[in-house]
Length: 282
Image 1 (cartoon, one colour):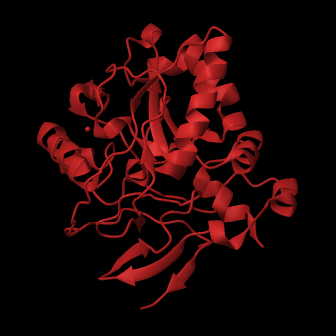
Image 2 (tube, helix red, strand yellow; image 1 turned 90 degrees about the vertical axis):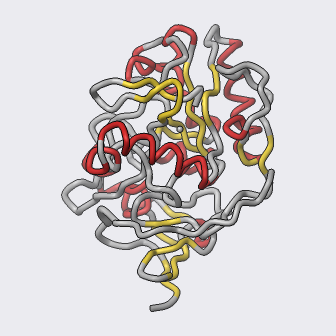
């Protein structure tokens, strides 16, 4: 895919987490459905998130989890201050934590993007949002295949999203609801998890292929919630964790982190922010 030169504009960071677990270096989808509750527009607006408003009172913190969870140091963000922004220096890390505190480097585009062999809500169109990084794409294929064998028919809606596409999505949402509300529902360009190539928005025919909370109540949505971790995916923005992720519940947004981490996150009812706040670096 074509490399895109990117210059990040002035960005207001909304929040941060206490107990920084990272290493500092230096000083819209077939698109989403609209609603008055920040649901997305089919012709353009994607609900993509990542704001981190974590504090110590928000974190699920069982003692057994604190003692047991460990993670190799290579999977933690390495951060450098770049013109006042916290920029991730190892964005190819499959565990990379991207939110409105931690930005991707200017011009970042994964080098191993492939189109997974799965059903898409928009058919066979070979377009940007049908791509994922290779490891995530292979895991998605396995998950969709097992779903089908269990009578669960899933459809991929939106995966990789470039900086330029995110700019379009964000600008459209600002025009629709104003910037104050837009930043609560759509990631600022450069801070989008979709740009990592590790996230896929998923829906079903039973949810009219929409990206709405309704998907979480379908047979397909419930199956994903209970089984996605077995393939390395987590529900990135779960219900009841809005004060931690900074965004509303997104029943459709699944993020690849690998089977081991996904299982630990699922079994301990954690968000990715919570996980990094308690996991021990080894």
